[in-house]
Amino acid sequence: MLTWNALVHTLISSEDIQRRVREMALEIHRDHPDGVHLIAVLKGAFVFLSDLARVLPGPCSLDFMAVSSYANNTSSSGQVQLLKDLGTGIEGRDVVIVEDIVDTGLTLAYLQRILRARAPRNLRTACLLSKPSRRKVDVTVEYIGFEIEDKFVVGYGLDYAEQYRNLPYIAVVGD
Ligand code: 5GP
Image (cartoon, rainbow, N blue to C red; front, top):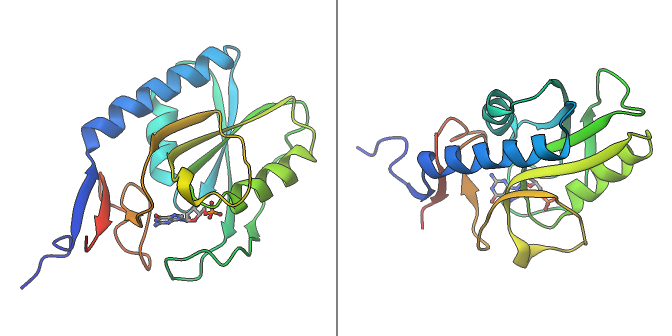
């Protein structure tokens, strides 16, 4: 009988992720020495946020948003829907969006547009993963963990039909 993770293959190990997340935290701290307001995009960014926040040297506050751009499948519909908004305002604050992966860029472009309209002092973005070959819109990401090829990945918060989010590494399904 197959075990639950037998169909996935490691792409980025847990050790490599931890090392890179620590570097990203230092980059974010360098640009925000007085503190930062992290906005994580649910559900996929919950693991990245949790590791990033714990290695960020300076003051930090947190909030969450949820959007839906994929309906239980592996291709982008291009439709972005706001499912959960922030709990507090961001006017005049130094904000970093924390996202799991930037693929076509449509989700991030939407988030940056609606958050910029709320007049933060700075709005920057941290993504653990980026698939540059898939980009449909030009979107600025100041902090990128890893650039990857056009493969559907799971783990470290990312799912396939709500499974695999709890893998401590990034993997490819059935490659
Ligand atoms: P975009 O709008 O940039 O095309 O897509 C962003 C969202 O699509 C991500 O936040 C993520 O939820 C989902 N996504 C894109 N590529 C992948 C992938 O390879 N694996 C998983 N699990 N989700 C992905």
